[in-house]
Image (cartoon, rainbow, N blue to C red; front, top):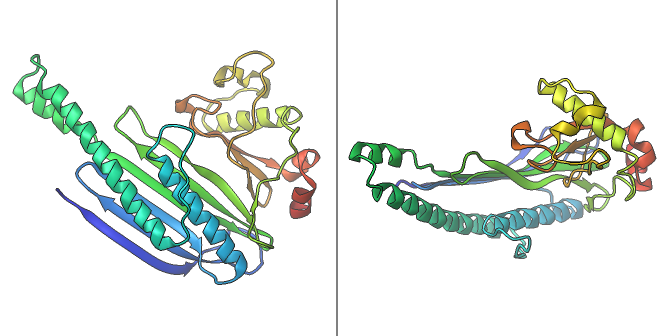
Length: 288
């Protein structure tokens, strides 16, 4: 069995996407391992500073990565939480998760092989050809620094997985915004009752996304493209938190959240001026 294993830990300064404050030094931590049954890759950009804010953000990201690893091995909503406190523990968990996924993929290969070899309607040549098509599983997870400003920094947690089906999928914790004042995870962008009032903005954003995909649709006619039924159906806000940028908040829906798989993950930016009536006081203080 072919096995390639590498652990690389290197510190570097990340390029900032916006802002003019003190830039955050980040450490790039990568674990990669490939066997005959699975390709597993994990890459984490974590704050490298020893100040309280950097340590606070780093610990939260390590725990988020750990939770994502736990989620790879269960199919229920009740994902077990394993508190960890160091990158060494995170790498150990990557190795353990890879080993578990490798065992599952090996079992999957054995089941597929048995079905093929026991089929009396297939010739020996056809069996060998079908065996060559049995896929290798893939798991790629990453946490990356997207923006580093005076007041906040933004990371993206996203995982790609392929388990031998018709296509792969994308999961993860999405956009993660941390305040530079205390390292806390900021999630209070919008008021709790904003969704209905934001419907024109969401419809326009989805229509803009469809236009980028080659479909010219008026905002009032996007219903036929959505997995939302009924003329008066409310388009929900994404489960992912929005990503703050220079011009506004970027919203990203997950696969199947509101559209079929073939339409990808709708993503669009709404300007701060359009969003101001729906923003919390703390969000206004950050972006105005």
